[in-house]
Image (cartoon, helix red, strand yellow):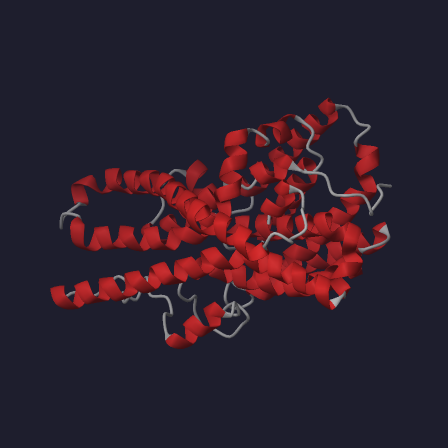
Length: 391
């Protein structure tokens, strides 16, 4: 068994593994509002894009446990717990706040233009309308908008994820204490996570696409799976490292085969079979976390790791570009696009994805990275780069 007191080594494959999921989420949000491409191989995969949230919650539980296990006692002291929360908020809050400011400016400007032009702002069209009330703003600033206090998504709708992530950070010491120790305790936590996900998928009426309503329960279940997986990784690490590289490659090929099989053989999106895709995503994290094998090596390539570093900002920034796209559709496009609808429907997402990457990079460079460095301060303890980025 691995020594739980040793420093956590860098797992570069998990940073690279974060590169593509935000792009699938962008495509999902676009196509849910605009219709799909009538290409089954594409539509089925993109329509299940909301399930990449499972991947991120599982990865978050894994990485936080992996990083903090060797000093778990400090999380049960006021100073250590406070430092942990400060570091997590320094990671999560600046981009969240920046996007609230961006959307507030867009709200004022676009409503003013709509009033002057005698049309309805894209922020007020029922099909796109988030809750942008003052009450919702307060909840968003406090990061509690997904704590079952809202009846709709609000402001930067995708930030419901960060609200749940903040709750998970608050509860993290409890998770860590529950899983720490024997393999049996980790397996029990793993089972409870999957049982909870299964019950949610069966009772929600729309699979695991659960956000402002029971998003907390969804997040806690996924996070528990990630915490348990990290504990099992610690127990298995020394044994796994004795395996040849080819064994890891074979396991990863099998795991990704299972993942694609689950994607394409569990029906259309938003159904109780979503839990099987969550299980396949758990296997992906488990197969990559040793940083060995051909697919793990692929994810350690610099371009993917760079994109993985920007992934949080890409995810958080997409709402602004989606709203601008809707403005273009409302005011700038020719009135009759019937003859060119198919071409436009292909070009829009093809341009939206790289635009979100560039916008996410700008948020990362101008907001996330400098604010994180400033808020953590020079006295912040040094942590392995890749695991910290992977949350």
